[in-house]
Image 1 (cartoon, rainbow, N blue to C red):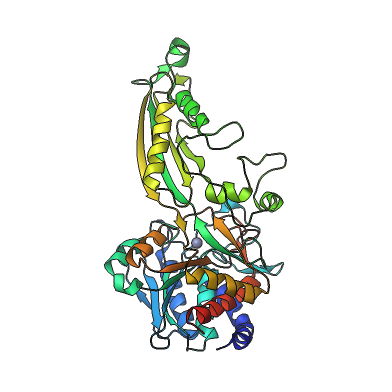
Image 2 (image 1 turned 120 degrees about the horizontal axis):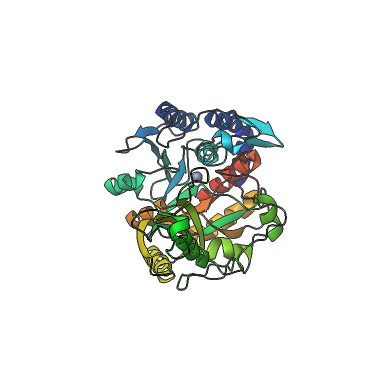
Amino acid sequence: MNTDQLRANVKAMMPDVEKDLEKLVAIPSCAFPGFPPEHVHEMADATVDLLQRYGLPSARKVDVPGGYPAVYGELAGPPGSPTVMMYAHYDVQPAPPEQNWDTEPFVPTRKDGRIFGRGAADDKSGIAIHAGTFRAFEGKPPVNLKIVVEGEEETVSHLGDFVYANKDMFQADAFIVADMGNLAPGEPAVTSTLRGHVHCIVTVETLDHPLHSGEFGGVAPDALVALIRMLATLHHDNGEVAVKGLTSFEWAGGDYPEDTYRSTSAILDGVQLIGTGTVGSRLWSKPSVSVLGIDCPSVDKASNVLLPSARARVALRIAPGSDADHEIETLMAHLKSVAPWGVHVKTERGKVSNGFAVDKAGSAYEASKAALTEAYGKPAGDCGSGGSIPLLDILKDVAPKAQFILWGAEDLALSRIHANNESVDPNEIRDMILAQSIFLNKFGGN
Ligand SMILES: [Zn+2]
């Protein structure tokens, strides 16, 4: 099917796509422990139903041991054509009242040309893009297509073990992950790198038990004060990460304008941006470190004692291409090396995930950029992503020759994924269905 026909098909299906997406957004499919499981199952069923209606009769639920089902299906292309597997996830982040949404998070709401609601972008838009792609080809795709839609991306995922136990299902020449987005609506870009993620818990002990701060303070060190001093060494005065030995490089692709960053982040007036180099470098190719939480008495419960122990969870986003084991060991060694006053320090590593870099020499990368350029009518750039997708490493492990495409309708400027007032631009979904369809044509050699 040629591009003109595809474009016409996509245009004609959009009213349905938007309505169907709204139905998905209305299902609060939060897979975190403690949330009602029936909504997650309802969402899995709704995903199967949508895919079947849009041209994938084989769509079905598959059991993922220990977790929620995934949705899987395949559709044969012409004999001898390559195989492309599409990925999205149907679970969502929670949307608790303290996030202060302007609209009800699970009541899809149209405003300013966008659809607001939890999961409208992340990642129910990805499901819409894949379903739309099946429909665009009217059941006759130019390549062999497979799809997996996971139900536990935002929480503890069991899909990795499932992939290792079912390697045949996950053989493909290319994977398309539709859980990303352009920098701004209408500005096409493929994501070529992802940062990785590591974290550790650091515990400081100074005393056997709490001491009266008047009788003992000024001589015996307080564990919380020691911990704060250690955490304060993680950054230079300008906010650049000060941990020596971490991997870091300058981003060479398109940049993220500072004004756009400022207007789309929740940064308050007068608060400075931290770090050095372009915003792209700071977000996509340099490490960033944050303190996620500290265990110590709360202000309300605080009393006049020297604290014997305190601990913090420290998280590090690592540069694409770096070795996660090396980076976490470097962070933990740094924390130990800066401990003051001989205090006792324990570090405990958490889960690590490597960064990811798309193979730019591969045919899929060029084809994806060309497809975006054609669909949007303007040249596609490439950007990185500061986030991490641990599954990519696993897919690469079971299908080492496969190429990867990371894109989607979660535009960085306005989508606000994981935050309040998440939304998606339906035109991004339309253009991404078309781009994905054009890509499949190109990848299939048409
Ligand atoms: Zn996502």
